[in-house]
Structures are given as structure tokens and as C-alpha cells.
Image 1 (tube, one colour):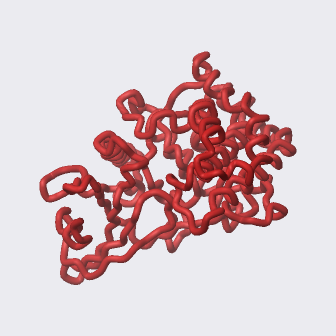
Image 2 (cartoon, one colour):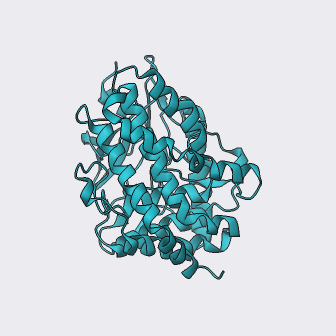
Length: 367
């Protein structure tokens, strides 16, 4: 395996390498922060080793991110924004390729780090969460005319919840390869009782009531970066799962992550609930940008999408736990089970609060 320095030397970075260090808190890829000096100017870049166990079609993935970021730069420029800060700028290799593939099959890509910026791993205030809603709403709005059919599906059936249920969760329960099913029988039954929820949005797509759009598909708060000085949201990052999807997926996953009153792996379930204050803040921000492009069916299912994305995430954590923790990074043997229990507790609280959630959505629409 080639050294990181050798990998770094394969890209068109500007200046002389000063240092590199691991960076970020993502579950999937391995990320490094690179610091370069060019005269009196210090520049920072991000280098990532792509998880090829998760992303099988790296060519398609990188075609997606280059196409979308190029398109976004044009739209941002036309709208008077700063295209150098408001979307990612990927760096090609010295051989003019979109990513580096080594003989052992490992793949690396690089992009400019947006200087004077920060991210949040957890929601610190309703105000910050609203700003992330504005960022993802703007992302949706700016890509509203992008030809979604030209994008590759980097993870097939990524948010196809009924497929997740039938083709991943149930087989994991039945095979029980690690003999863990007995330790999570209540959680398994909870998910089984909500099988019908898993098919709801998929059926609406088939009925042509929900349009496929260019969506981010991983809209956690820590995938938005904020300006250090103004604390305004400036850029949406982590574009690996940008592909055709539903606006509901983006909205729902944001709520799942950001409106939980506890961290995603909090063990004390009594601390877990949906913050209606945060739900309203994000809804206001998101709809202020994307609202005009959503149809009535999308608006009617926004609140439900938060529950569905939380249920899906719980199902994925539990599936990975049953399969022996092969997908998500874990810090200890029960980590994925703790995450699943956490998300299911949030689902239960959303079910109790669904009428209030639906009313909040109506308050920010014209219907």
C-alpha cells in the first residue's frame, strides 16, 4: 500500500506540503486535512479515502460530484454568490483524473477546504438548525432544474425503505450470523410492526405523486459548514450520496439528526425526544427556500418523512449490528445496537407528536 504522502503527491495541489492529519467525524470514509504553503499563503485541502465497500461505482460517484458542483458554481455565480465558498471545488490528479485509484483498488479524491469555516456535530441552538435548513433548502432550489436522470445511483435503493426492510433487515434477522437477534428481539418486533410505513413513499413514487429530484440524501447538520465570523451557513458538503431521490428524504433525515434532544448514540433513552422547537426552526428555514418547488403531496408528507427516515436509520443500524458491524464504524461491540435503540425511541416520540408536526408544516405553507 502506498503511503499517504505518495497519494498526496498524485494530486494537483498548490504549494508545498506542510502537514497532514486525520480530520472529521464521518462514519464511512477516511478523511485527512492537508496544509500547504505557497509563498506567504497557507492553503488547506481535504483528502479522502473512499470506502469502496460502500460505494461500488466510484466512477459514477465522482462523475456526480463533479457535475453537480460545476452546475452549482454557475447557479451561485448567477445569483451573485461566492462560488469559491458556497460549493465544493474538487481537485483532479496530475493525470487529470477525477480521483486516484491505486493498484490495490483503494481510491482517493481531494477538494479545497473552505477556509475560515466550521461545522457542528450536534445542534447547539434552534437558530443554527434553521440556518442549516436554509442551506439544504437552497441546495434543493438551486438544483431544481438540474437533469436528475443524468446522475448515477451511487448506492442503489439507498432510501428505498421497503427494499431495506425486505432485502436487508429481514434476511439479517433470519440468518442471525452473529447470534445477536436474541439481544434485540424488542427492537426487531418494533420495526416489524411498522412495515407498512416502509412502503408509503415508495408507493407514492410509483403512483407519480412524488417527483424524483436531485437530492443530497445525507442531510445531517455536520454536512453544512458555517462561516467562522458570521456563523451563517455557507456550503453543503459530503456529496457522495447526491443522486435522484425525494426532497422528503433530505428533509426527514435532517430532522432525524438535528431535532433529537440527545446524541445519536446516547444510551439513556429517557433523554431522547423530538424537539418541536427545532423541528419548527428547520421547517421554517427549509421551506423558505425550497417551499415553492414542492408539490402538495410532498408538503403533506414532510412530517411523516422525519419519522420514516428515523425508522430507516434504526433499521440500518440494527441490520449492521445483526450482520457483525460491517458497514458503520463502531467504537465498541454494542455501538450499533445502542444507535438503533436511540433511533427507535425517537420514532416513538415522533408518533406521539405527529399531529403537532403536521400543523407546523401547514403553518409555513400557503395551503
